[in-house]
Length: 342
Ligand code: KG4
Ligand code: ZN
Image (cartoon, rainbow, N blue to C red; front, side):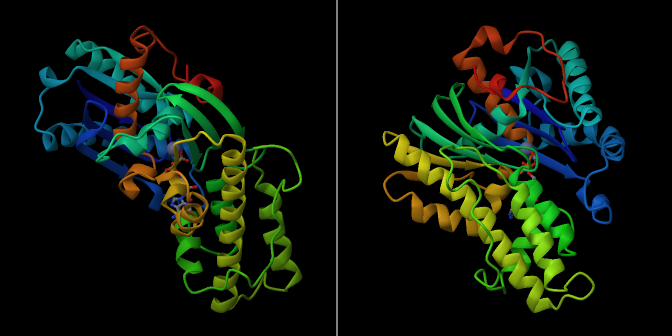
């Protein structure tokens, strides 16, 4: 089954052709993130305007790279939410139109199900359920226990900021460019991660939830208390970046450790979402996952927003729940998390 995936939930415009949920035949990602370096974050209206002229060229390129024509496709899968409404509409209106024109079924995908599906893309072996997935990006941070692609339960979620958002806001406090994850990771390379102590959030609570806003506030007060608001040396900036990154990653890993103790039958731990690109997080998680496999998406492009994961999710939804996959859907900026799985 060959699916054309379309993803436009934030500042990326992406189209991909994926066969049988795993074989990526093409994946094009156009990003307007450089337009938001100065603002320190995405301006929704501007992101959607940038996507309008690029959506058709991106789809054409994905079809050309995969060497397929509309008659070679079996379905179109598109992100139905959550995300920025203007951006989502650019993708979903295009997908609806093409599905009508090409007489193809249209599958609406919850963005989170896309991230949960990303470890299967180009993966040389078949991951084994039950799987614990830590999915962390700019818009969400969750821990899922899955017994199949589309079934399982949400074990914990962030109570305030998402992990990627904490990277982005921290970068802005440190005077580093957007997106904050890669720029903090880069600055941290030469820093000492024990230079500034940060607390471990929710350490004493019996929960698998996350909370990042306290760490962001700690960073803000550390900068203020050390008198670094106006002048910060490169050494101080890299030490702060390394210590802050370490604190964010330690909190994420701490939740995984706790979940593994509660559910010892877990086969694999998956890391997905934009924050999965973080090498420090991968290193810390690998130390935690000694008795079960740790799997991350095959390339960084499959961690951050991309259409291949949406096409993969379309395939898994069709194979596990064919009736639901073709149900009419609304495109929505806010979708309940519970609707990501069946
Ligand atoms: O999944 P994604 O592309 O979009 C959302 O669904 O939000 O994730 C983007 C987020 C941004 O907050 C970005 O700062 C973060 O992922 N990110 C990283 C890294 N690369 C991207 N965070 C930490 N380390 C990275 N290397
Ligand atoms: Zn995402």
